[in-house]
Image: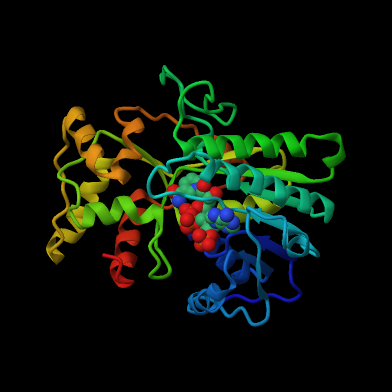
Length: 345
Ligand code: NAP
């Protein structure tokens, strides 16, 4: 537990109950910041405080306030007096929604609400959590290495989540590039799939692949590549992008390594088979995995990624921010261990 005095500043973190946001709140508190987190339901505040208290002594440095991405209410006061904003909240679905607007409207319009309030409050810098899905999707030929200059192709059919992240990030850059908003700096973190330890017993979408494998809820594996990162490293990337002088105006692909679903399953099998877990390790032909997707909505979500090679440059985040991610083994095993500890599997 680290505590510094005086505080290096006050940071607004949106969606503080989320997997990534909770880790950002924790790291900010450990570094001595004052943190104001937004929640959709204030009834969850005491559970969040108890979870964080297991890792850090926040004293009176943590404030929790109510704000919803679907409403203007509360954003102006939430941002007031903050030096930085980490805008992380956005819906992350477990299955594709019937209507894509269920994701697009909170993602894009919510981002605009946060940014308008942030610009008006004279905040130094906002860090937006986008996704690798805002950059690498919808390209017919995936022969090249993706860099931060790439954008997902909105002219072809993308999933509602991919569309929500692409539209939200495009809208954010459009906003900060307006002449009226030149004083607001923005950096964007584009994480790949986020693994790493969960801090409580709430089930969240990012735990689904590990849960399914550990509980053998799929008969076999699809040929899918996961650009992945550990949640602790994703949080540290946000904190670095918040203060690094060269981060303003840049997007950062936040990917520790690219790992096949088979590699993930083998890591879990090697580590947990002795404790009675029967992780599936057989790779299914594509047509069979598509059939599994017909009956399983969370498998259906990854069918568009079937057989897509992923080549993603992470040079910028490593050179500009000095980001050094943990190994994929650590990210995968720590997530499964924490899910066992919290009774999720
Ligand atoms: P998460 O645990 O599901 O957290 C999402 C957060 O967004 C929750 O706090 C949720 O609040 C909040 N939220 C959703 N709809 C909202 C609304 N209408 N108003 C206010 N808050 C709302 O997901 P996560 O994995 O931490 O993801 C956080 C961010 O990282 C998202 O922007 C996501 O797109 C991005 N990202 C995640 C991954 C990944 O693999 N996890 C990868 C790339 C990018 P409640 O707790 O009240 O639901």
